[in-house]
Length: 331
Image (cartoon, rainbow, N blue to C red; front, side, top):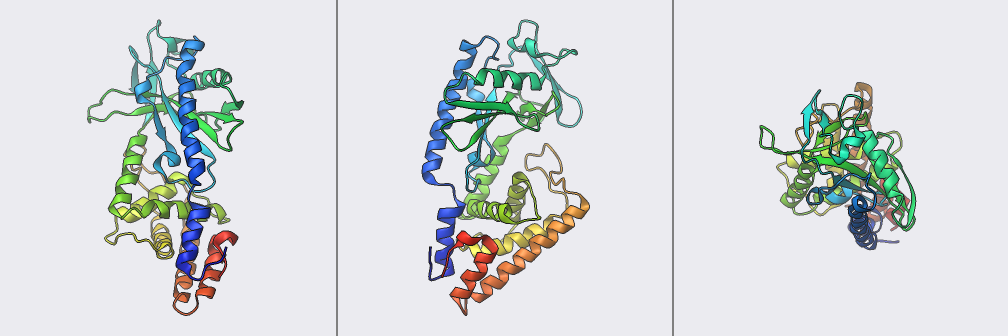
């Protein structure tokens, strides 16, 4: 695809390479709703499957927050379990143990100490999900936090996370309890992440989500630098949340500035936006400094590409192509 200006090249790149394909999004949302209906029917078909708290199901992750870049590879669903009559207690940090009465449907998933074992619950999800039509395979996610369902009709998988919605705690907050990977449960609240992304994006004219997507795509293609999607998103949102300057529609300038901002922050701890997990920057000290160098070098390359725009659009487009990949376009 050819373009006569950098601005046009970026518009085409965002449309065809960065943002999710609109048809794929529509199909994904429809298939997600269909799958939720299938899961809703499981307690009546399989008496071993836990009872569900339908009103508390929630979509989470980058697809729900509209911060995922191409290609769509997974969709996250949090399926709420009926916890009536049960209780939970916090042990260490955000780790919790859940207890239910003997006559509770979840009693079959208790461990030797009487607590509901989240791994056993996920395994039951995997067994019961095998009855869903168009089923290809299901397995436990490597970190033990979700049942990963692969359906034949789609190119993406579903990460299905069993969860409890708590009652209000002393601070007035409710939380979701999800598997922690070790058989227990941990607190989270994806509602905060979603509302934060939406609010910051709206405060900056609706341009921030595109920047998040662009940075994520650049990271996918940048060898030698691995940042988690969640940390990346937090850093970009922090950059705009703490900036006095509004985001604009020119993605070349935004990418230049946000990469420099990320470089300045990556060597420090990064606070969990949900105010639950504390620091979410788990890079080692050496990894942080290496990431800082890579991010600043990338920002400098973006600045050099921007400076070419006033003298030669062709040279500028060529420079951006080196930064963003072969599908950026030609002059």
